[in-house]
Length: 142
Length: 301
Image (cartoon, each protein chain N blue to C red):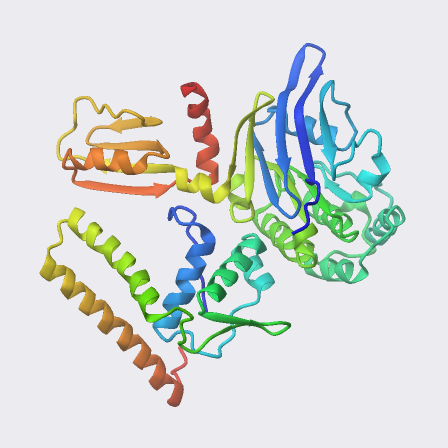
């Protein structure tokens, strides 16, 4: 998978990597059992400190998204969150609250906000199903 | 985790050349395993500080410790565990690449031949070429090989990429990340002095800005990008007097303004929001911009 880093995003670089893996997993770009790039090649490629990559992978592991096999590398796990349903709900509520506050300040009303949420859910489902179908029918070479 | 001494510990270092005070009461600490940026303008005192670490200069007051040792008293013990790449590298002109590497290896207890051949291949250096006929870029590459093959615990880089072309600069940084840090990263410390900050942006964990021999600011890189932000705002009509309390710097041209925030971007954003701007956005400063802005920080003090 391809990573993109923006030093001006106001978000620590390791968290940017975490978000990108989570996004890739949610949209099916990265599938369970698939290997993430090694720490050293990725660090060289992005020209960031290898500690940054290691920190991102450790964070992903603690969130239960990837699994590290010694000597093999970092794999995307099947969708099993280590958290209980209650904790998962709370984690998500926090994010939703932030989006709601943001929507308020940007003067986006309730209907428009809900419409956008639906649109994004559709978007991710579409991406995932496209990835799914490309697994069976070989992808066109571009 | 076991508490090991810091890779570098500088306390109240002062060093004068005659009347000129090059370094004045500088203090900083570099944790082992960290990549530390040492930023400053030409003549800020960067090289003087590094020379004190190497016992090429003696501190007139204050102290420097490398791996907890005094470089003056334990010079060999200190130097056997570090490598230094100066800004202007010089080799014996009659020696070939092979001769030079063997010569440098002869001073070292340990020399990793695998890294040597990897890097020679990567840089495309010709073993039979004499140093006299090498370009500046090739000499820097050779210096980097001589610094990395002994696998030192500390790599001191003094303006390593100035005067090099962009491809060589890129390779240089990739090599520091890849070949140098690949094994035992907890014991691979990098201390890099530079004013070409953007190239090292992703590598730096922590940094110090030195100005006229003094420590202007020391910060964690992520924390610094979190704290220093640039707010761009555009109004429908040019405000007569854009007075914002707590802004580090305000640059206004007509309807648009650029405001530097120092840890108070949210408050400033809220304040600007009440003025009903046409457009309002906020982004982090890069380390280079923070370096430039640190001047303003000084004036505010």
